[in-house]
Length: 226
Image (cartoon, rainbow, N blue to C red; front, side):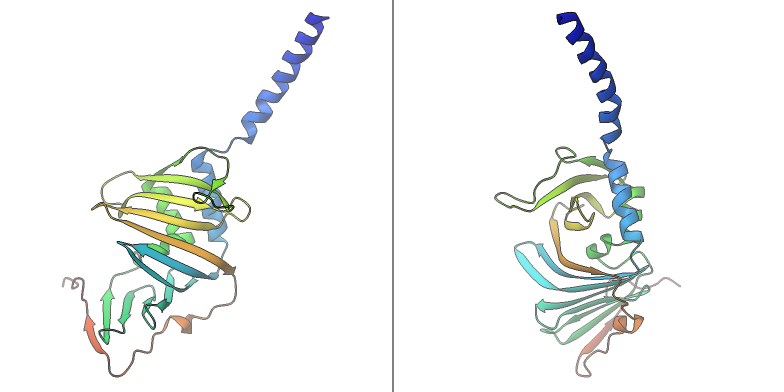
């Protein structure tokens, strides 16, 4: 009898092993799934909270594929960041200043990581691994919200960030949080909630009409070389 049960157990184990192996998704494959999900969006809108250096900012982020990005802040009130694919524009209401910079398609700020183009860049420039494992875990201590957490490490020094920690909703494959470690060591955290996709956002939303009283500063980061 013992030998019979042993034979049955070994047989079932032999069946289960390949099934279990098939169910395991590598971190790189999981990141590819998330990337494909975002690549299917023509546009999205979400509530965004940005935390860095003890400062918290909040607002609404709008994205239109492939590279349009706009953040209308509620805190600081009236502050705006717009990227139209070529020019980055920042309105700082407390300074009554408009900052414009010709930067090309690679800009848009850390929030642009949560786009199809941004995720494609991540897959090229970062090596992915599960932070603790493939199973969902609490977003943070005491949270009932559960996420799959991927740790992305820069493959080389010029990747923009040293490390990215992605917290992903396992049901929707939407990015809930990005914690980005800068090359200098500081951390910027982006939280995305109330995400709405394919709303038919027009390109006109990414045309910013600046206040007439604001001072305009062009190429405030660097100037194009002739």
